[in-house]
Image (cartoon, rainbow, N blue to C red; front, side, top):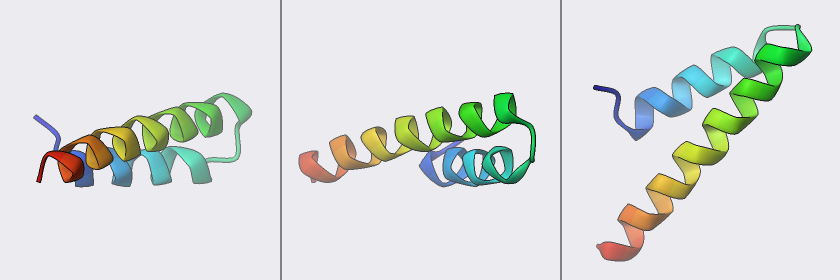
Length: 44
């Protein structure tokens, strides 16, 4: 449904919302998208 780019965009948007819960969720989404991106990059 969402690609890595979509997850990164959602994570950034959630991170910049000023509530602590959404910022935490944004960080989690960004970290998850980064791990997926790195795994796909290593497979080449």
